[in-house]
Structure formats: C-alpha cells, structure tokens
Image (cartoon, rainbow, N blue to C red; front, side):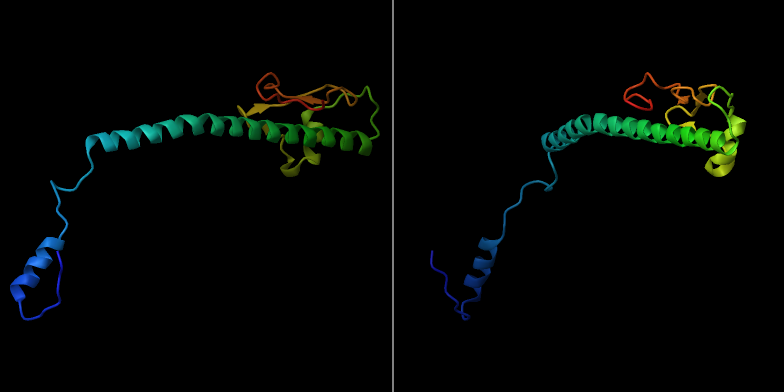
Length: 142
C-alpha cells in the first residue's frame, strides 16, 4: 500500500490515521500469571539474600565483641601497670572501669551479656565472653 501526502483528499488522510493506531485489547493491565512470576522472582531473591544478611550481622557482632574484649584486656594491663600490680593480684570490673571510655564496662552486642574477667592480672585469657561458643566464635587470640 502506497501512501501519498496529498492534502486534497481528507478522507484518505483520515483512513490513514485510523490504520496507524495501535489496536488494544482489554484494559491493558497485567495478567495474573505475570504478577505471579514477578512475586516468585522476588521471593527467590529474598530467599537467597536473607541468610547472607543474617550471616553478615553475626560476623559484625562477633567482631565488635572481640574488639570490646581487647579494650577490656588493655584496661586490665593499664590498671596493673599504673597500680604496680603483680601477676597474682585480683582484678575486678570496678578496678578497670576508669580505663574504659565512658567508665562503663562494655557488653557483648550479641545478646547484651556481660564479659567475664579472668580473676587475676595475668589470667589467660584475661576476659571471656559468654557467647564464646556461638558461630562465629567470640574469642580473643588464635
């Protein structure tokens, strides 16, 4: 079919405009199958991503716990050094609070539990976490 640009024949131009329109069926919405496929894909992505988020959170909490224990161990060392304590001298939480920022003993971010001090200045480990058996482990050293 050859189309001309003749301006004299308005009926022909009107027919041309009608032929060029896109034919639509129904209301133009999404079908139930299309929506179900999208929901299934979103569910699949969520099933893959959520365990990774949980693992990342647990690892971050373990790292924060280990850093807190390092801070408490350093406070024990500072307390012993400044007060001329020997290896067998006892150490309590009240003794080391002035050497920790905020004068408050930190708590494990995974469960908000208190740390357990070794008892003496030279105890190994000098501080432990009640969540030491969790995964990843909350332990100082190797």
